[in-house]
Amino acid sequence: MSACDAPSPLRQSPGLPKSAEGDPVFVEPWNAQAFAMTVHLHERGLFSWGEWAEALSAELHRPERAEDGSDYFDGWVAALTGLLVSKGLADADTVLTLQESWKRAAEATPHGSPILLENDPMRV
Image (cartoon, rainbow, N blue to C red; front, side, top):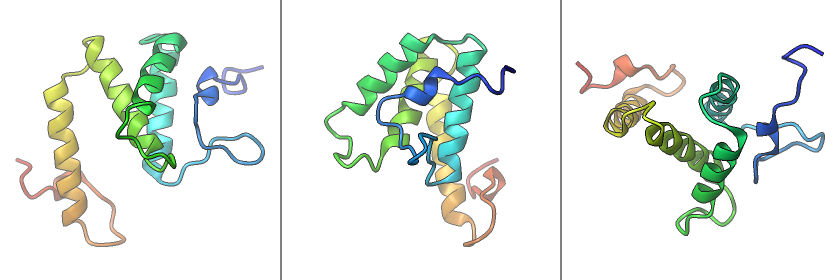
């Protein structure tokens, strides 16, 4: 079995939307990218499965989360960000600045065009 064939424990994340076959389901491309980034960072040893499960569970159980799970991957990204910040691997202010820049870029991008950070009208 190759490393690509070995199932990741991240597939068992609580509340992860799955198909009838048990495969992860991603509504938006960024959901899959967030999932893949998390798998990659875990496999690189930046955090343990237990640390990830604890961070994700805490984020998904916050009272402001949508009861229907529609913001699941927002919680996923928040958990990943919090975990990386707490380990000193990311700076919270830098992450927030990038999030705001991506949002402005998305708002400035014509429908159907790729969203690029260069589209942020405030990016220098």
